[in-house]
Structure formats: structure tokens, C-alpha cells
Image (cartoon, rainbow, N blue to C red; front, side, top):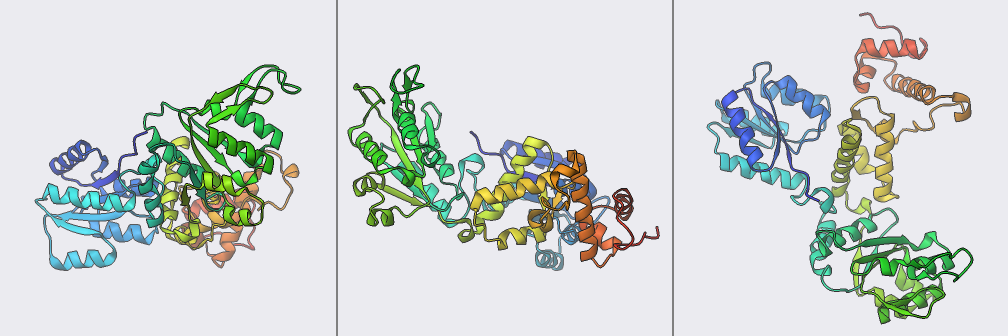
Length: 449
């Protein structure tokens, strides 16, 4: 699968310059959205994710510098800003850089220098191989990714370790993409902890008709189905001692025997195992076979927990929000407080917890911008009534919305203007919601419009 192209927000009112830049970016395989006014550009930046913004200083409706300042005041999550102008001064350049701009270029533009700047910014925001084919931007995950092309060669076993939810299967699938870029061979995954010993044996090795009650036909096991490709055994430490023996025999002899059969079937697979437990310690405790340990521990990849690679948090968040926007045609962005809260959170459930946190916030949010309260507030349990007594989904959402608005009003000392700004709505809209949801005067008084 090809990685997603970098997205550029171009704010340029000059027709000739805008068209020329837009066409060149398209030729360079960037996705460029061109806007001719500051207002249009601001609306796009608030609703879509961009890797970089290129903004002219002299715009028909607002000065580019003022636009940048206003966007920062609204706490919109902004990409790197590069300003262009035909009237450059050193004082303005210094001022913009102090405000947080990435670069300041004067016209006529050196297109090669501009493209170099754009690529450098985009590579920093998300690597060129990003999309579904990268694991992260932290040094730890880049190191893991750099090893995958070599590990994909041959049939050497690979062991992936790390906390639950850290993305071990994600790494295994990335290895598979290196192993077979065209996807012509199978990738078969099974969680060993989810099956009993007898079921796991039947799943892995298959069975013949009549091997046990319910075996009404011959069935291939996962080893056979994965022949020529990769077999991924998640939570391999959960295997019983008896199953460990059978797995060891299959790995050593490169052949399996279906349950109830005697015929040996040769298999050619690349085995990838994963666990959140310390296998070496389990070996010392006698809970995991030492010979099997050395068979699957040929190459060891350890995936650090998310709290130890904070650089990946916002990168992953961007990926997950992009996926949400694609699936639901409903863009979501984060304000600065939300970004900080994500970075400060311990993420004991790692990527799985992050994904669920963002999905929950996207479902409950009625606005494009996600706040820290939406991410970590107890909105799911906000209604004091039990779900059985609330009725329809619409009723439940209204109760949740009422509780959230009441909390925000209290947090802002009952000030309507500040609460409306925090919610991303007008004072009039907030008051209408208060009337509709029967939020009484003890939380706020009607504003004088």
C-alpha cells in the first residue's frame, strides 16, 4: 500500500504564483490545497491535518502575520508555517520566527530552496515512508524499522516483546510487508491465549475427519495455511508445556501432523512470536521450555512502551485521527491543551489505549476540535441515570452534553463568553443549548446580547 502524500496548505492570493506553486507541488507528489484568502486558509487549518502551511504576508482580507497570531490564540493545532513575501524586512523575519514560524522566504522564490524546506519539514512531521508502512518517528521505532529489511530475508525466527497494546502485531505486519511487498504469500495470526490446549493444537496443525467429536471433515491448520508466508503466534508464553513440545517439534522438523492423522506434511514458514512476558524469567522458573526459547529467540525485537517514546504519541494521534476522518468524513483536530494532556498521560494500555481514547472523544464530540476534557473527562459515565432508564441514544447524548456543559460553566466561574469560546461555539448557541437542555440559572445567567 502506498504511503499517504504529504499535505500542504497554500495561502496565496496571487493567481500566477498560486497556480505555479500548486502545479509544482502536484508534480512533486504532494497534496496541495490552495486558498486565496486568509479566512479560507484558517477554516481549512482548523478542520484538516496538514504537514506544512505556506502563507503569503500580503493577503486581501488579513495580514499573514496577524492570521498566524490569531490561529495561535485559538489554540488550533498548527503545522509548521513558512511565510513568503515580496516585501521582506529583517525585523519582520525575526518577529515571525520568534512567534513560532518555521521559515521566512522572500520573492521571487527559489523553487529548489522552497522544495528543500518543504521536504525537510514534512520528513520531520512524519517520515517519507509513513502511512501504513511505518512504525513511528521515535529513535527506538526507527531502529526497529531499520532492521526489518534484513530480518525479512530467510526463515529466521523472530521474537517480539513488549507491554500489552504496544503494537507487537503491528510490527509483525510491517515485517511481513518487507518479506512480501506484493502480498502474494499469507500472513496468518493467532492469539495463543485465546484458545484452550486442544483447540490450539487443532488450529495450528489441523485435523482429519473423525479425529474428535465435531470433526466432520478434514481441515488444514494454520501452519499449512501460512505455508510460504509468515505465521504470527501472539502471547506464545501462554502455551501449555505439552503444546510447547509440539510447537518445538514442528519448528525443528519443518513438518506437522494433523490431529488424528499419521502423515507428515512439510511446511515452509517464517515464524514470528510475541509475548508481553519475560520469557527468560519463565525459563528460569520452569514455566517455558529452554530449548523452545532458543528456537524462537533467534532475533529479538523489544518494543518500548508508549510512555518511553513520547515522540510517537502525537504522530500516532495524527494517524488515528486521519483514519477517523477518512472513515467518517468528519475531521478532528486537537487543541494545545489536548496535545499536552496526551503527552503527559502514562498510557499504561499503550497504543490500544490511545486508539480507544481518541475514538471515544471523536464519537462524543460535537465539534471538530478535541479538548483535554473530551479525551480524559468521564463523559462516558456522565449521565447519573443508568443506561436502562435513559432510553434512546439521542437521550443519552443529550444527558452527556448537559453534564459536560454544566461542568465547563462551573470550571469557568459561570462566565458565558469564556465557556462558549472553550466549547468552540457562539454565546448565542451556548445559551440556546442551555435552554434546550434545561440548564438552570444556578450555572449561568442569560447573556445580554
